[in-house]
Image (tube, rainbow, N blue to C red; front, side, top):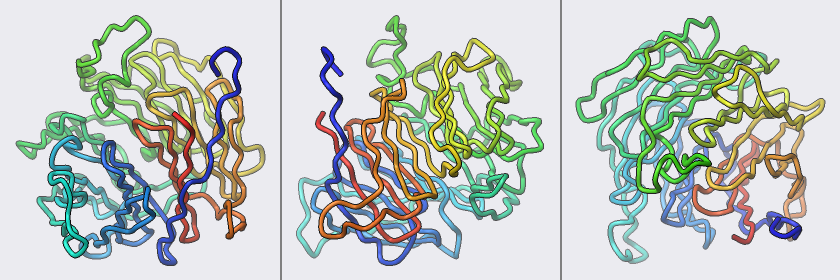
Length: 363
């Protein structure tokens, strides 16, 4: 903390009851008090989390399980992108109504399918977990809304595609040259501009980071780092994790963080071929979820052994959550997903039970 002051803990501020469905993906809206929650089937719920109210619910067509969520144009008429294990990315309008000042109680916006893209042909369906994770379609959108990055976590394993969304065609194809599935991915232009300033302020606050830098994690524990401005071969390939990579994060244009199912979190300088720091978070238990906050040096991990750890990048534990606060007082469920708010110190946590918890720390 500042001047030796202890860093504030994260306190539970809301409990959202998602009607007997486990949570599979969580996504905060960066500007509106909205949280998108998907279940293990094809349901999408939207919550006003400050009031604890569900404002919307809709279903993906067919029975496709949603495996990725992202926003297009969050500062305007927000469009929710959903990637699912039928290989299709769908774009939904009216999920949050941030174009009007207010709506009357009986006038919630009805989500409407604006368009769809068959992003990964012949995608085999897979369940997350086990020695080799198969998390379906992995998808991230550029913050400008112009590009979409997709990879298959199962079935058609070996291709990362970069799409031009306006033209609806693939501009770059990367053969990962791996026999293992992509299990996590982040792209430089999927981050907000100010989150990727490096220490020397090489990128001004208003500048977008250069597109085409992609960090991927694989089911065999490998990390591969691509800069498509220099071609489609990886600039870096590192094998330090001994289990599948749960998530990857670009801290800035030089530093990356990754976490694996065995509970190790590693910090990399992308110019080097080895990590400069590692934290062992989950001795003896499986790490099912890992997220790093885009604007602060805080990360969170979740376990199938029913706990969440929130800690600094140096390893100082800020909160170790095992029980729900208040009248529930019950043990949290095995953690299935976590999400930080991009602009606030807020964390959402979903589990294999139906409860989604919100935790906040004073900003």
